[in-house]
Image 1 (tube, chains in turn red, purple):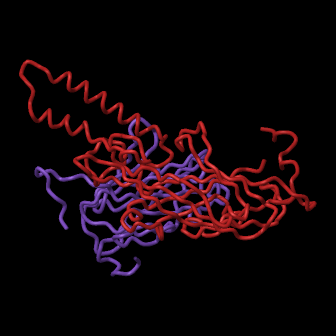
Image 2: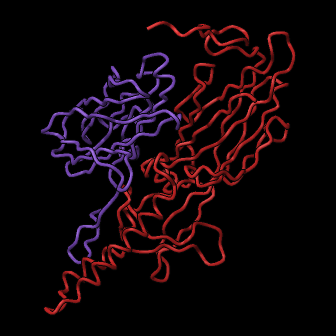
Image 3: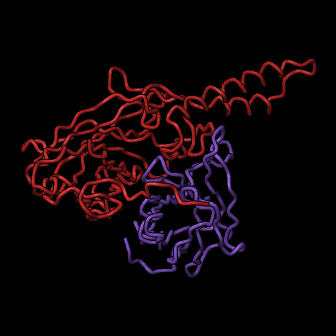
Length: 260
Length: 152
């Protein structure tokens, strides 16, 4: 199977929530610039899908694409996704230990209590009956407890669907898959590409962002559904060896390792 | 609008985050980081410019907390921000890690309002190469009045 291509979408969540639009608030990447992807790092990415034929003209394998969303200004996706849950638990444990240590003979000072209250932080809930994030403690962008609605770490955007001409014309077959890879929370969107029809095919990614709102003295994750667009460019260039630039064959390795 | 003072306590806010998106495989293959480094910050509404280039100009004010972090395009290749060189009268970045991990970020406080852009230098370690990569283009910190009102 051909190598899978990752398409990373970086969302300026703060601006997107403020303007209620993803226009100008997404930055798209794939690591296929050397093969001809255009607009890498901008909101106008055209992802190249080359290598669809063998040199003899016969059809090569299909391409697989993965979409990986990330929030700008948040804890980066290299930090495992269960990091926030682990931090929350570790923080609660420390608070409990310190609370137990407070019950000394000299009584409990209000300063200590206030400090611990701050450490307990705030929990944000999901709206009643609605879809959204599970209840969790608010952490800031470095993983520390916060109770400030101006400091919390934006949750990673969640892709909810992929639609558009590329889908209706049956160029891509997108679906959400489960994965043991904790970096992306065990879920990711992927698609196989019909590489037999060269052309440029736009598609729309539907995402859910999460905004923290205060309602009835509670903090609630309100989901905000938005959409953004990109496109695929399928070309009929033959597959080639990435090392030699020529057709597929053996890798340019010496039969015997160099001496020394 | 000034922030609300609750119990005379300063409410914490998000830092201005400057994120370096790096394509480590392309940078290693071409030995050129400039074409494979994309800088962004969370202050576009305040007028930051140069998004998606290695010459990002971030609009900052005295007292702002800055945070630099890295997103690699290839999660199987090592990328780390190893150094930030900037005039220490403006900011003194320090390296920290996300608690419980070995993934680093850098943070600093802006010490003074800037009248003109202050360039700085970022260095990255990529893959297993022991010499840091430093882009030729320089990102900069800029004050609110430094570049007029253009560039929104």
